[in-house]
Figure 1 (tube, one colour):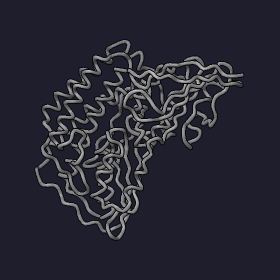
Figure 2 (figure 1 turned 120 degrees about the vertical axis):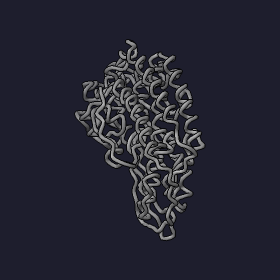
Figure 3 (figure 1 turned 120 degrees about the horizontal axis):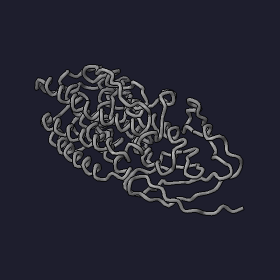
Length: 408
């Protein structure tokens, strides 16, 4: 029997409306609780079952979406197996933006690889550059001075600020609170201008390299404290709105056990109650105390609140670090000699790991990159079990995953 074609509207953003092909599936459906698939080769995790095929049964429909989406977003193909509006299983097919980044490093000198590493995932230029720089420094057996490490910490936290406030606004926008998104975008523009004054680039590119941290000026801490108060007010307005809380609470839950089994990182892990933070385990300057976030329910609300808390914490880190800078010039990089090295940095999405190998002539012979999105993408299908299709854009934005960082 030929399946009827039904038109379904599905947004991947607040203003996105996608026409999707909905196809009914045959057979007996399994229990909803057994249909939570983990993408990739992770297998079963915390009571979930990884299924390679589609879900079949009376009333089960499949909604394919993408890889081309509305708006300026990265490509990814999604398949929803649904009964009514309830998602039984979600599968994400990625790798549409695979560029062979790791191969492109080979034969370059470390300094020539900086422009490439800054573009692995464009909103994480600092995180990837710092991890790469640490790996190169480890490979050549050199250590940068404490003032350089402090400057790097300042730039790393500036990157966290503008990305977190962007997501805070986008999450509000996805539940119809466009006014709060406008406030967040205003703050983002202020932060991008701070970035430009500090580094000469709105996305903080060109400031870091192996052995060095080149800042044009230090950020105005009084300005950052005013911005932090502004963001706190915006967050308070969002959490005080009944519609926002209703849409955020209990949506796309990722339990602590599931997050641990999958190996989630960053704010996704911390929102589920895991104490995972490379700023404590692999600090750039001094180890930061582990911060227990509230709430830790693993839902959209928790991921929103973690971002808000980390925004305030990042401002506090910058203020404290700027006060400790003594103005000594950044260290000059040593000449590469050869060997392996690794670097671990807590980027704004989570822990970033780079490993490099240098040849006898000092050129890169191998570079391995692990972006936190590689670990967090498998968590999204788990969290979407029993979530309704209209909440997918909200859930997806709460994870804030990078396609380019995963696909490399």
